[in-house]
Image (tube, rainbow, N blue to C red; front, side, top):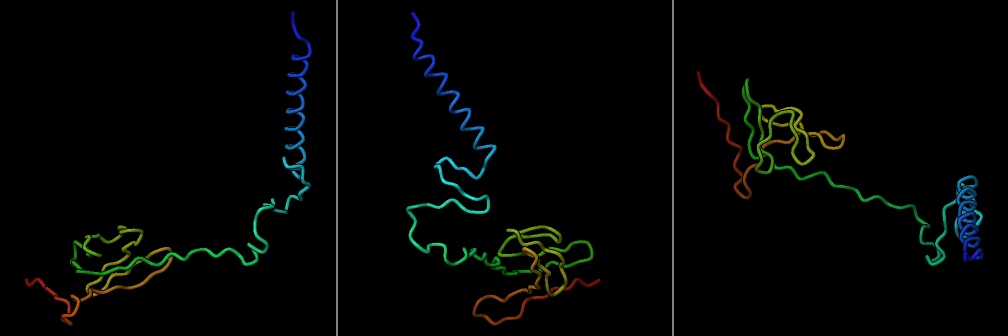
Length: 137
């Protein structure tokens, strides 16, 4: 024999869940916790300390990658630069830094909208000027 109470109980539980879901979709100002919240308000955590968001959230600034130009290879047919020991052709990327233009004495670099020139740096402590090689005809 069927127990009508359990079947009716199950159907009433399903109907209650359906009504609650429709109400939450139709009226977004009601939240599951039963609080009335306007659409522009944020949900409030009752366990947070007072004044925890009194200052606007600060975004961490990402520093521009440190670039050391080891050498520049500049010719009519080939333009390449060594950045931190890695050879990069003109127009290519290295760790998010794009080599825009390779010139004989400097390189134009770009990173997140910032552009700057970098030149060959001498070895630490030597104070020597960078070596320049020219091909003779």
